[in-house]
Length: 160
Image (cartoon, rainbow, N blue to C red; front, side):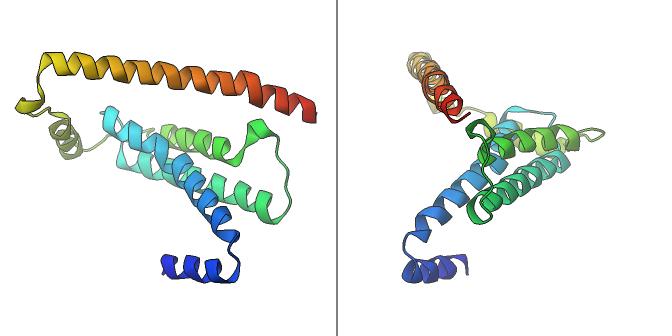
């Protein structure tokens, strides 16, 4: 059904596809992104916390992106709906985790997924891959920092 709706909108108003794609991508990235990483790396994340985090991120992005796109709400660049949704997703996850414990079965399944197959346990390949991963993380961090310092903050200060 969603595909048919998008095709209909594409036929009627082709530029709307970019808006829909941007809206959907930011919506899912902000609401599901933190949970995706958290659920793989944490033994303390409960199902309720994950659900609350995804719902909080989804609602915040959907509301603020809709208000920005359709009602003319202008937010400062540093309060982008995606950033707000990302923060809401993390906050909702933290709040949703209060008083709950993850299931033992879920953690056992997660640990089984984290096991490295014997054929992939070559120490030399592992070191090489680790160097590339650490290098990539450092480069991405530096790019994000440069984007913030050289673009976002100067741009936001010119608008004020």
